[in-house]
Length: 495
Image 1: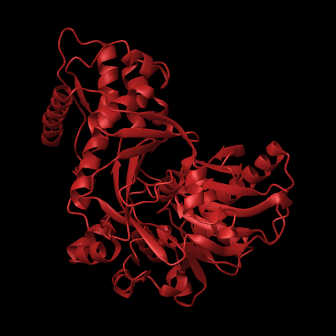
Image 2: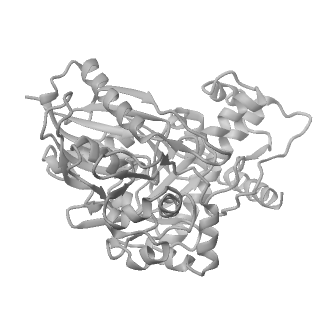
């Protein structure tokens, strides 16, 4: 009898449920959008109960779509938006406040206080992260300081904190299991990634009580069992939990040191597998735990670009040079090159390695002969050149040569962009058969724990490639592109 893996992919804008077979074929997928809540400028929230409801609705829908008996589900894996923070009452199971989303900037003042008190190095050394509102710690601090009576209830052990994986686990197990995995714990700004434990010094500095924190477990292993859901049988093991970007790295079968993936979404995330080496970045990259399989912990360097696919949306909505995002490839292909036009997509500041939040976008090299096709091509090239800079930083940090870049996300379907990415990196760019790599990663770590695959080597043999883009650009032309890019970036940093 064929058994299936149920993968739950809980993201910032939607939740998807996928049924995946042992050959990593997606049998069915359904999804529902998550309503965004913006109480004030810069604040972003989700309703935790709505997230649970939409997750349940997605599971019911995918079972109905596939017409599969839920008793055939062997195991469940969860991947999730990472730093988003939920606190709930342990007795009632109800949230004490809305989930504070990773994008939310409300805790900037708390971050500045911690920085002014001289704690930045303490956080950096223990967690591998920057002291920033992005991560969970200051979101928890804000909740403890703001919600009436929450601190006293928390100090008595009456409340629980979790990233979204832990919140879903609590609900799927009927309130029995309060746990997370190392990849999500490593994004809280409270977890010591070397000692593999909640850090006492960081808890003291933030005033966060240990009682509220989930148990931290390996990424692949038993977290709990379904209970009391009705639409799923009891006792299905939930055997894999992993943060979304780490899930994409795993789903791309980037198992060895030096393997790297780039996800092209609204922004882009690049993760570089450093295996058991915990590398502390000198170039503004984040050091994070990728996953833990049994007793082996794998680390990664992470870099992000604020704008990737969003630059194409800007070309559509802001410039009006295309009617839909898919049109940009054909428009850009209408010219042989960008005609010397360079676009730096710093429309929301610059991320790693620059970390310049006030940087503004730049289009340079415009002449009387410039057309919208040249600008379209320069937009795609700017997306790829950002990735080039991130990957160059990673090469310098690790001292490792890159052999290939695995790609996923919406923009990875753009063949012109992927070919240019291969050309500027001067390495192969590999696109998978199934671009649902985040969901695949969740299924893979769960399936490993359930014995569907015996080891990572077997998983690698199951992973399927769609197309490889190989560099073909002459050396002199490539150098010209990179020189113009460096000059344009300097201009955006001056603005």
